Image 1 (cartoon, rainbow, N blue to C red):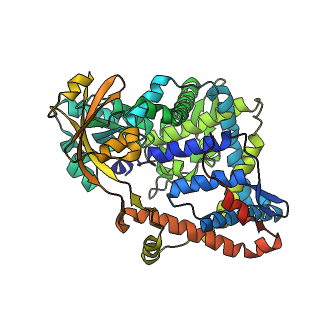
Image 2: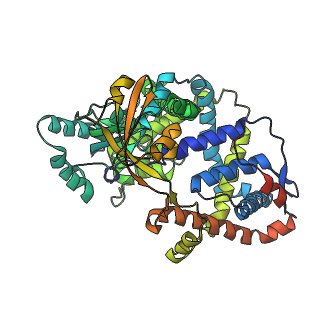
Image 3: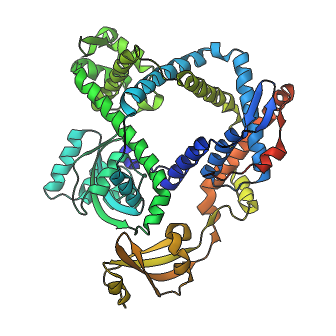
Length: 535
């Protein structure tokens, strides 16, 4: 059940915004002089391409930059391009699976290009929103949830809560997951960018102890109650401005996503979609696993009408359009409400395509199709290379890894309190209502880290000026840098070993290809490359 999984925990914000920052920096450095790091027949790999991809890979995996890793990455990058070229030369573009994927890609990119130019180009974000997202990144929330697949179901749950029922009581009926049932829907603590945007917005804006209205997400509808909200202090304005461009990029991306979603809702509303409810019920029975419907006349029945002038789809016509949906989108259809949303999404796609047919395509449209299909060819070729990793292999890598991999930085436990004036803070001998305790590393503490790590346990440090207020810290236990245990690091270890073996498997398979095209890797040039971001 989707609700039993809460909401998928996404990648931590520091990976997301860090990657955005790296890609922006890599793309915005115009003074760099290009050098070739790999050559073959009709192929050149430039150092800027290598730096961008290799740097993103280092950030994603957390591994150290090593000479051997640079060479392996460059060989794999160049050989994979040769494999794509040979696949095209061998006629993969004529194969049915390629043609089917190409048709889907072209439809999607036509819509994306149209929406980009007509809807998204004018999207901007305010300074207030950028600061709000930065503040959220310093916060952790403890909340409870109840889940329903429909808005009506969520309304019913909220009515019961308003009439005296508790989350603990209702979770017994809502969830099959034993943890959520016994905890009353209590979620693990979460922070910025770890939940669906609508879920997150509600959690950060909802007063502590208050029950939310139904929150609509792609997984369904949620009722929230925030139990606690813990916010670390914004250390300095300097730190905010150092990271501001990253949060601005993130805020702009989120604003564009919201604008796109609202644009789609507007299209559906204006289309005045009307369903034949009986046909809709019969169709759901047909597509629900385990309950096949045998009715010869169903395909020719009218299912839905929309638009002006009115258009109509039979069940058979709906199936023609549904083939362009993803497997994941189809798998999410379990109820009548899901099926309605699914069909409305297909209708929105059709209406956008109609509008886009007379619209001039952007300058990079065909290049984007080429890029996406190149990635598809790579995925198609690599299916046979995916390795199985044993725990013994993972432990062997963990034990032989470079010293800086899989390490926790030094941390200090802090409590703190904020005051209006420095005199008020300097007179304090004991906190009245401190925030914390919480663990901080040097990167988080910024310019105050040296003072705080140098202090003795139990010592007051400060006050420091923070946004026209004054913050006073009290130090707790310090924890030195240490290597993560295998259990702490095992997900990262398995990912790294799998990635490494995947590259090795590909290069073994590409050995003849590399020789045939006379691939040359300029190893000296690669080792001299700087991965730092030029200002």
